[in-house]
Image (cartoon, rainbow, N blue to C red; front, side):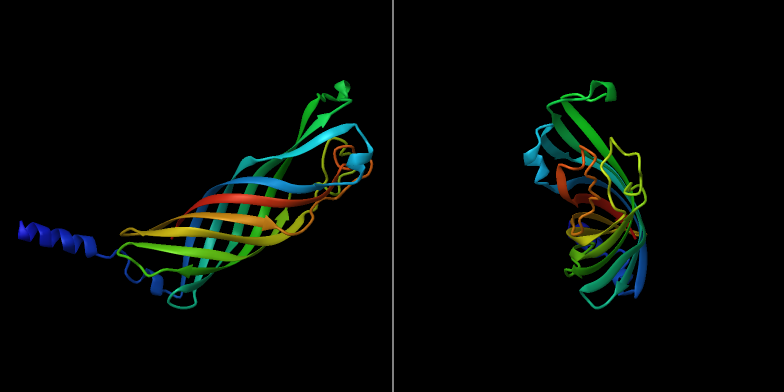
Length: 227
């Protein structure tokens, strides 16, 4: 029993990839899912006209694909970025209309979807705890710049759309966990993002756009990183 207990204790204390965190650079692949929506404000015209009775931003689910580059700054601090980070989203606005246009497939409750294919470049500072056997917890925070390839601000015939600008910037913060395996490190990570820029390209002639003033992006992302 003593020999068995001793062998079990040694197995518990065996460290996987003991030199992983000492490397100046290491890389990873990020696969995640996100829940995103728009935070918006009503334009004064919303109170002046009664064709649109209510507007609501609807959350939707998307996916993230990214390549991680991590640079060690010290024992507990790292600098992280994602040189290639694609985010696929489909946000939506739901309108309650008083006079729906039946010939345009409108109903009293009408939804207008806003699809996004975004290239994001975040820069994050990572603060890690001490390693406990094959486990570690960390916090992240930083800024990001995003470019939406699907944004439609330049379209002329967009009567049924909400026009958005392509460029956005903001901040994000989150928490993650390192699980050290013999040949890789798996890191589940949860983070939230706030866009600072008003991405709405308001068009006075579009009824789905003129009742909204400013639009800013919001997101919650669950990722799994393999390093």
